[in-house]
Length: 371
Image (cartoon, rainbow, N blue to C red; front, side):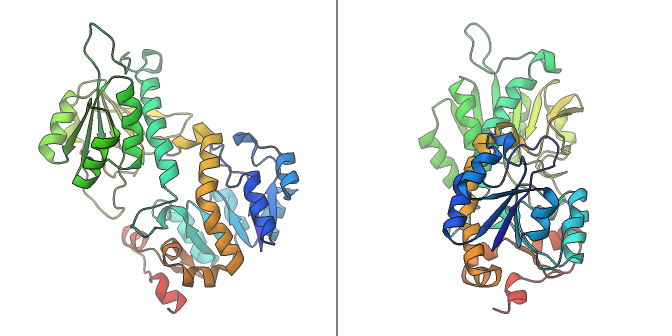
């Protein structure tokens, strides 16, 4: 199979789907790899690194024209729609529920779309979200430290324990990978940290991996409101079901927060868990609602591109190799966990949450694959 890796064109996106060692794995398995000129520069990998690993360095149009599978990081933007064709395999973070225009064009062009974020493992977890979630959680707290600074329109609070003054308080919604990542850094700097979750098993696990200055609370309205009142930073580290119309933190609940408090929404579900969240960019990362600063950049890991690229490639590569070795149909039929990621199949939507959110007809992956 011919694998194509284009350069990402999303604003301030510096990651790339494949590192040179990944190229070597594809070559070893008998496949061809096309890398767009300069695709890895933002992550510290030059064209010569890929060439030495066995890839062919080509212009953008050649990548899309020759590749049977496009292996990338982010969703397709409008400038990339023209490259789509029937039967092309797309393997990336698709986020079909969030981008209606992309869903339209994927269906129209009858691509085979497999999304990183929907692939599951035997425990029902999301192994291709996990590496980026950890970086997003830790990176999200580092951004909180940056945007509480007065020079960035923050309230001038240093998120660390300083003798003689009140210790800052950080509330984190979610005890998953992102939440634990944020709590690790926040607590190690001496902040008073509270994690809220409805999963008591996750809270118990957190007890054994985090220091004693992390409070672990069951997430209900009473505890959430208490945290809103007392915290200097609120971090949302949970994915919100895309078809839900309610919110965990409503606009009205912002009145409980101190003026100048910062909300960091790691997952940036538009009007999701945080009603007032709307995705921003690294160029214009913050805005204010009801006197509360919001940081809702939807690609935090891109800031730490070399770390993120390497971690992401390690996670996605086994699945990409399986698709290439077996072909998409056999791979999807034989691997029920990979099959969870199938979003589009020759003009048919196969992801339930996108069907529900966008009010579109959909079928299950098993229906379109006849299994």
